[in-house]
Amino acid sequence: MGNNFENEEITINFKKLWNIIWSRKIIIAVCFITFITIAVIKFNLTSKMYITEANLLINKASSTNLSDINPFVVSDTGGMSGVGNFFGSSSNVDTEIEIMKSPLVMDKVIKDNNLKYLSGPKAGKYLEARVFLNPKKLKITNERGTNIIKISYKSSDPKFSYNIVNSIINSYKEIYEDINSKKASEDKQFIQNSYLEAQKSVDKKIAQLKQFKSLPANNVATGINGLLSLYDKRLSKDSVNLSKASLDNKKLEVGLEQEIEKLKMLKNKYEWISLVENMSKNATNIIILRHPEILEKKEFSEPNLKENILIALLISFSLSSLLILCFEKIDKKLPFSEISDKSYITSLKNLDLSILTVQIFAEEIKKIGVISLIEVNKESFFINFMKQNVYNNNLEITLVKESDPLDKYLNIINSSKWLVILVSPGYTNRKTYRRIKNILDKLGRNNIFEFVI
Image (cartoon, rainbow, N blue to C red; front, side, top):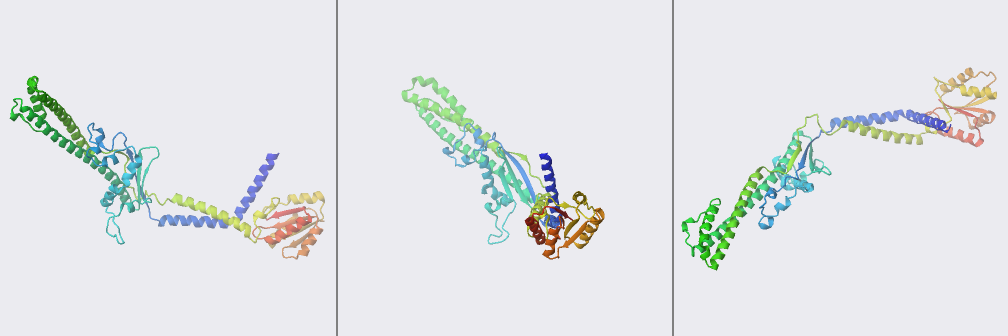
């Protein structure tokens, strides 16, 4: 039973809400038509924007600094600058993003695409990296929880957007190749210098041994690949007479062996660093998961017509709702929101007075007062319809109109056991309606039929 009552109340409230909306349909229509039209016009007038995107995977397995694969790498403290440390961590994606945004990369992108100031004191000069890094156009971001970097650029020219993204990728790769190549070259030079110093030391010790042993002077060889074998032969020949050498000669022999071992190690280093130098020419620490593409003219990203219309619908709904609330509050004419839920909402085409007829016969009503706050034609139609359909020849109908004085209202209210109030939203004067309702409430009159036409 309780559920039925609640359902009935919800239905009544929904009907009332619908009537409120329907009574303000012109306001709603104007709002929706206006803003949808604005959205379409804006879509047609706004410049089309194209967003070119690329996804890069920062490869952890491939170190940014190829010297990391060299077991004989020369550390920065051994003669290198601090560049290797700065570029040495490929797992730090945030660092890679900062490198991409750095002038080291951006200045090359700017020059490759001939981006210059068009006006002002710097007209004709290349853009500064900080000016080019406009977050509304260029975005370099990290996909959270991954080693993927997303690069996107927005422009009114799809080819220009493509060129920018492609230039960033190429410049970024070239810088790493240059850094790796530079590191390998510097390591190679360092090892060559170390080798020459070691060679001089070996030659010096051999010369000292010659004072005690008969070693031919013309056995001295040079060259990074041939010298080591000659030193081995000298050592083998000299070792025959080592038992006869003095303690000083023994020390010279040990020192010579150490220098030869050092030469062997430097030879291995040289071979490795030569390999790294060759590899660094095409080295990169990225894998391009999504290559940039030149978009078609119809593949623009902005403006989005669906989004524009959706925004227009939301604005229209919000504004029309606000206007409905305002008009329901300030309208001088009676709004639907102020009509009682007990009122009978009907129309002239489907006028139904069955509830009134039943009440008249049940209580044998002889006199009924009608308070009309509607148009004259609707009022006449209602009175005639009531006379024809209420089968009671003795029924006296007393009519009072909105323009009648207050005394006449009071007389009908006091003299009639039952009252019929006719109202029409959008026509009935709100102040008059409230005044009559207040009088009825003060007099405690509940025998009322209120018809909304």
